[in-house]
Length: 481
Image (cartoon, rainbow, N blue to C red; front, side, top):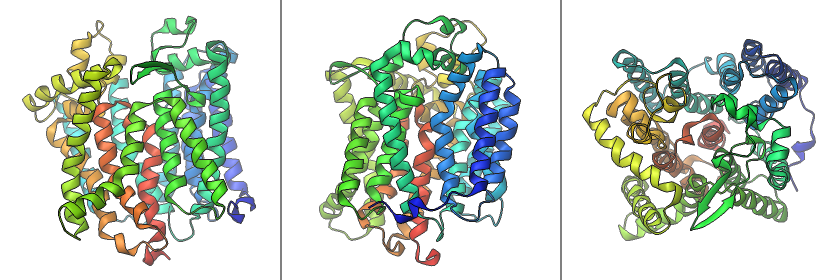
C-alpha cells in the first residue's frame, strides 16, 4: 500500500501559502496586473519555506505551480479577455522558488564544489553582459534558465534531510501524474476547440508568440511530431507543451522507479505503466532519450566495469561520460539520416553554432543567441540560418554562444561535480539500491547530452524535477539518518 503517512494532516501554513499563490496568480491573469502575482509568489515561497513539518510539501508545491502555470494564465486571461502582462506571469515559478530560497536557502550555507563552479558560471554570465546583450526579455529568459536549475538543487538539498519522507513525496507525485494523464487524454481527444476554451491562444501569447495567435484556429506545430517516420498528435495536458511535459513525466517515472515509496508491488507497477503511457503520448524525443539512457545507465556502468576489468567506479564513470555522448551522437546521426524530420534543425544548429563558439571563446553576449533571441527580437525577422547558427534548438550550445566556451564548460562542470559528489558517497546511501544511485550519478551527464539536442532542457518546467532527483540521495546519507 501507499505509505500510511499519505493520509496524515496537511499543515495549514501549506494551504494558506498555496491559496495566496494561486489566487493572486489567477487574479493577475485576469486583470493584467502581473506585479501582484510576482510579489505574492515571493511572499508565498518565503512563507511556505518556514514549514517545520511535512517539508516535502515545499518541493511538491514547486511541481504544482509548474504544472498549473499555463492553465492559470490561459483560463484567467481567456475568461477576462486579457492580453496584458501575460509573458511576465510565466516567471511566477521563478519568483516562488526565489522566495523559498530566501526563506531557507540562505541559512547555514554549505559550500561544495558544484557551488564553486556555479559561482564561476555566474561570473561569466555577468562578464558576457559587457561583451554584448540582447533584448531585456531574451536576457532574462536565458539568465533564468542558467540559474534556476541550481537554485532548485540547492533548496532541495536543504529540505531533503532525515525528516523528509520520500514515501509521502513520491505518493503525491503519483496522484498528480495520474491526474495529468487523465486531463491530457481528455484534451488530446477534444483537440483545439477544448484547448481554446482553456486559453491555449493566450498561453501562446504569454510565451511571446506574435499577437495574431490570439485569433489562431488550430494548435501549432509543437502538438505534432514525427517519430520513426510516423506523424503523431502529442499530448500537452495542463502544460500546453508536449516537449516540456515529456521531461516532467520522465522525471516522475524516475522517482517512482528509483525509490522505495510503497510496499504494494501492484500499485508501484501500475503507476509505472501509467507513467510510461503518458510519456509515450507526449512523444518527446528529448524525454525519450533521457528515459532510455537512465534505464541503461546501470547496465552501461556494469558493462564498462567488466570490459575494463576494474572495480573503480570513479574510473568507469570517467570513461562512460566520454563514450555516452559518442554513442548518442552516432545513434542520433543514424536517426537523422534514416528518418529525418524535425531533428534535422538540431544537427544544423550544432554544426553551425560550434564554429561560432570557437571564434569567440568569451561569448557574444547574454541574450543574443538561441531560441529566446529569436522570440524576443526587436529587429527584422531572424532567418533560420541566423537563428540556428547562434544555437537555436540546442540549449547547451546557445549558452556557449552567449557566455562563451569557458562559461559553457563551467556549466558542464557544475553538473559533473554533482555526479562526483554522489559517486564519492556511493557506499554511504543506506536503504537506496545501488542501481538507483548509479542512475542518479549519470543523470547530470544525461541532461547535458539532452541539452545539446533540445532547447527546452534547462527551462524550469523541464529541469526542476531532475534537480530534486539529484538532491534526493541526501535523504539516505548515514550522517542524515
